[in-house]
Amino acid sequence: MTRPSIAVVDHGAGNLVSIARGLERAGAEARIATVPGQLAGADGVVLPGVGATATVMAGIRSGGFERPLQRLQVPLFGICVGMQVLFDLSHEDDTTGLGLIAGSVEPLLDPPTTPHIGWNQLEVAEDPLFDGVGEHPEVYFVHSFAPVPADPSVVIARSTHGSPFVAAVRRGPIVGTQFHPERSGPTGLTILRNFVEAAMDRAA
Image (cartoon, rainbow, N blue to C red):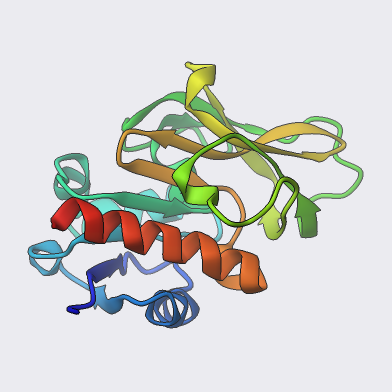
């Protein structure tokens, strides 16, 4: 069986190697896309991100990825800041995002520590992204901000650090996690595998 091809966007501020390795372990053929043309033919796309939304969006725009990402016809997975830039606006630095999901990115409320670094349990909704992970999986976070969607129905997971926050979203084939599946052990690998299988099913 042919492995699905998943493109990982290189916008200059992402954890590319560990994400690509995780996707390979999940059954995909992972490739790093340094220019927009390398998204062509991919069965799915992963948008990583570390640091600040302004830096990530600057890299997306300077690399010419903004319009191609907004027009994707395949599943898209935003990770950490890569999830935050799926939204309209980040109040971390008043940066306009891709506008693929309505809402904004806000500081964590009443956090005991900032940034929030470490393992936390999720409260997950029924969603194919979380097939096989159990009711309260533990995943790894590194962040100080989280999205606040305009439509609560897009939320598929929450967690708590001081106050509850949105940990994962879905709008159609677009998904995003505030946590890092590539750093979340067997649970994260299952989540990546679920995304890979969804990309393969859509391509079939």
